[in-house]
Length: 229
Image 1 (spheres, helix red, strand yellow):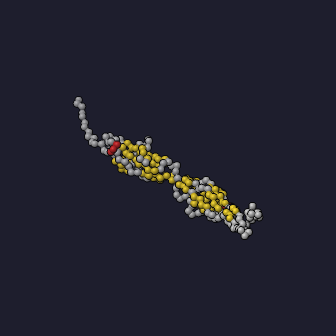
Image 2 (image 1 turned 45 degrees about the vertical axis):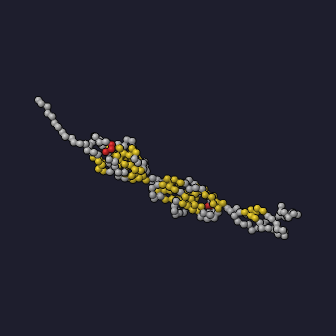
Image 3 (image 1 turned 90 degrees about the vertical axis):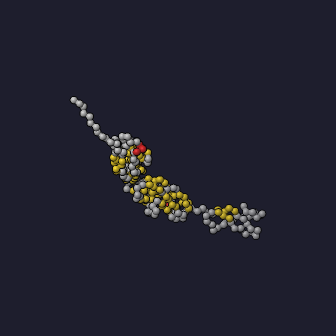
């Protein structure tokens, strides 16, 4: 019995082509999200996902589950058969946005002012909008302010010295700042530097220093040479 011979024409391998791009997604902090891509071409097709242009180890299927990373993810398809890496198409970028709870990046700083001056505290934070700011004085809630990232104690007095802090809240959580200490100082009384006597025996104007002029003078008896002691 003669052997039968059959010829089957396979044709040229088809290069890979992307038919469905990965889509940008948004998720909350602590949750994962899955990206996917669809492609055609002569199998087997190989895949390599990247994060900001760098290959992700083990991410070599048509889907990728991302956890706790924010930024750009793009999937690169590498064709099988005789196709080289140069012929592998690269998908469009898919951006992952991660909503986060408030995080304080710049704490309010200590302030020292003279009584009657203004003291302003400032805080900087990141997190999902909208965020609310509640300033506190020695743990007691203070009136809301605008802009909410700053709090000004106008005409500060000594009874308003103490610790100032802020609690920042959004739908995912809250963050409490460290305490910023407000110190309020009183003006220093005038201090006499020198006292002199004029030739006719009358007291000369007093030289003094300090924040405010006192409305009295202090004199001493001159000696026989006319010097004060």
